[in-house]
Image 1 (cartoon, helix red, strand yellow):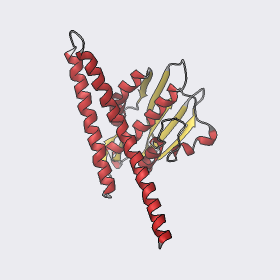
Image 2 (cartoon, rainbow, N blue to C red):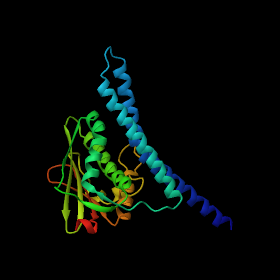
Image 3 (spheres, one colour):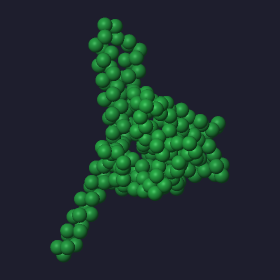
Image 4 (cartoon, one colour):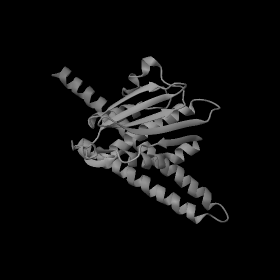
Length: 240
């Protein structure tokens, strides 16, 4: 009985640590954006003639990221209550555009060019918009870290969408150092990271989300330099 109790306690503690890591990872983006924007607003207010239009835009961004953080917390509560994610009709292209806009400030601060090559029309799928956006954010965040690791080079990230045999496909490519062949699969394992301050949960969370939506995620190197992370999601009946 004592051994059983100890094993149960160990499993409970590991699960709690994983959950804490997931929460920290998902909240880091909106909270970081709020901090960056508030610092920018404070710097503007110190000037003799603050740009009110820019200040309004910053406040709008802060409100948006605050709502996103609140939504992440709500979803984590749903997970704890074993509530399944919301399956609604969404357009992957729209989510990609919104996500690029959301992260444009971070990319600019890191001097990284983020562009998109989005297929015409819509890529509609059934799933949870917030979770899919979180998966894309994690992939772009991973790419930002990768290109930042290359010294004295202008980083570039490209998000590409297309339609492939009943699936919506998304690819995030970067000009970073690429992925070692032996690490192409383990990069998706929880707590695997090559960054000193990394949690190693971003890609693992992305894989969990994509697979829960009936999709698949994988990574390889592109010709030249850099890595490419691919996602496929089943198109909804309306989009076939």
